[in-house]
Image (cartoon, helix red, strand yellow):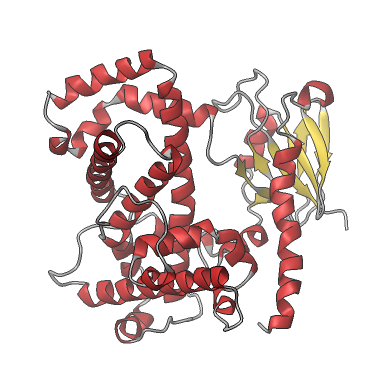
Amino acid sequence: MEPSQLPARAVELIPRLCTIFAPHLALSGEEPPYRNSGAGLVLVSPEEISLHIADPDMIGEIFARWRDFVRPVQKYRMLAIYGPSIFTVGLDDWPRHRKAVVGPFNDDLMSLVWRETLCHTRSMLHAWTTQFRGDIPSFENDLRALTFNVLGATAFHERPQSQADTRPKDSEKIAEDYQDTLRTVLDNSILLMLIPYHRLRGTITPRHLARVGLAAESFRSILLKVLREETAALGSDGSKQNGLLKPLVRALKPDTREQAKNSAAPVSAKAKKTGLSVDEILGNNFVINFAGHDTVRLTLNFTLALLTVHPDVQEWIYQEIKMFSGGHPNDEWHYDMFPKLKRCQAVLLETLRIFPPNTGIPKTASHTAPSLRLGDQLLVTPPGDRGLPVADRCPDGRQVLGRPIYLATISLDFA
């Protein structure tokens, strides 16, 4: 991409970002619009016209007819910073990515997450009670650091030396520290969606932008390094037993596996019916971190904030933890204890119900021009590839799919 083309890319992507956020802002007022307009309304945004639905039967039909109402892939292609992923591919290619991506999420990984979370939480609490003596400088930053550290430990088996330092280090250190590169990349993800990271390394690039570009390149280099190590270790005793990356390495296409062992450059092989290319492994690894970081951090923020103002619930879950831990210190708690903590799980599920970290599940009408029934009306949705569709919104007392209300948004393309 030539430098002269950068503004064109920004002009293309900024309206799409507006279509993602504008509907949420328009529908986020204290007075739910459906009390006056009924169960359906049309919202006009800079790029499209979208149909918003607050009818449970109609929403159920949208999800059941998954071939008629598909995910708007073009909305997610901005996430392909490092390569294609499960978010950026179409319906025909999605099963191949899903088969590879679900592999890491098993009991072995969950057990590792359990141990690392206990370890880093103990470190965080120690800093709160000794170094800061209860006067916590930034609750949000500490939870962000906790999330980053657990992600790093479970993905690459790297444990940072200190939990207390939540600030990014200087750019010279970023290339050596995965935690800092991941933090910098995710904190500047919108910028990286607009401008390719290799364009942020010029001699006239402002220092703060060059720092982002260096972090993005360093993160990719770390991914490639671990990918080569895991590929070389497959079938040997040196292969790690769990983590995020090893199952993805096993999904590497046979014709690219040997190249991945011996080459630092990614292999951009054309997608086949089975296996992933190196670029696709890098892309999926990034989106797992991108999606997992925000959802976990926001859920922790809401959960702990709610527990703070509800000491009775704190006592309620404390009694459960005390019973199943048997009085043992938390460094002796094992993962098989987790399924027994029903009260703790109930608190998390209720927090997710009331304050979901992900407020949208986009869908768009396919070219078959499907129709939908809203009450006694039959709606024919014009087909279109441009869409901002299904989102939770505006509690007004109705129970839909376990939520106070559920809002579906269907993209309409009248052009």
